[in-house]
Image 1: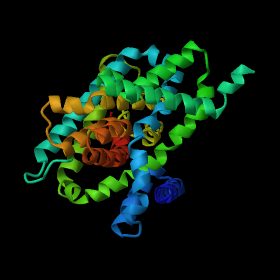
Image 2 (image 1 turned 180 degrees about the vertical axis):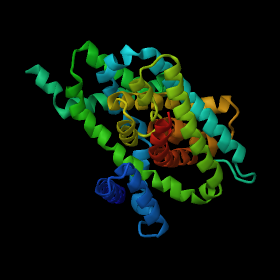
Image 3 (image 1 turned 120 degrees about the horizontal axis):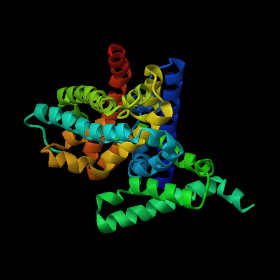
Image 4 (image 1 turned 135 degrees about the vertical axis):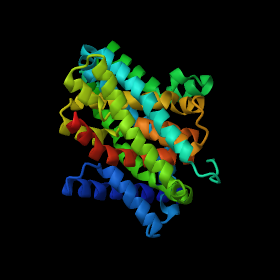
Length: 123
Length: 230
């Protein structure tokens, strides 16, 4: 039961912050989407110790371990634009694939070169 | 009346969950990149809809409930960032400069290659913000005069490439730090790459999540400026 109440409190906090983020985003017509603003707000509230880690931990774990699933409907939406892609498939396909690898290489190399010496690696 | 059943949210939600569960099972058995759950599920569902002649709009009635969970998931990325904030603060320079380099590399390579291969101006512009998370990418492409629908589709394709082989590609080209790998995958492949990175390493996933926001912010300012120059 403790887990269940933790889940609803956590999800409620995440949705409330996304809502505030959407308000800020549309209110000030910012180019940044509401959920990214919500992420920044949550980070701030965690640092200010207004939101406690254990309030949101269960909900965050649930969402982050299933994040790939939530993208599936967006991907299926690509089928509506097949004709648009087919009309100029070569520049679109080569440009998209090549640039994805170029960005990973450039960003990865720059970050790796500047990595602090004593910094430990992740888990 | 049978067709009405496919127009209930039940259909889209159920289909997405079942296909994704099957994809996870296949991936766990084979560990084959070609069966990366997100890419496999997208392709399988598109094929099923085409074969059974079910309109996308019917599927989307349920699909949007699954998609809805994406919003709070992005907010949730703040927790792993908070838990590892000391390691992130120690990497301010590599993170900011890596993302900045990535933004320029993205526009130059995506739009450059498409232009070189004879893409029309609208297509060349649509490729500009394709490494940016969807809502920001749409805003940018509207500003620079591309096709928003095309950009939305390319953002997903870009994400799938990073999810399928991003961490593996980084290892192949000699990137050893988890932070640099997460940053690379998040900058190139936004949320879909981040979801895969979270499965590989929580800290790497947190850095990838940070890259979604910072890349989006930098791109919203720089991409329209870059296109104004040409």
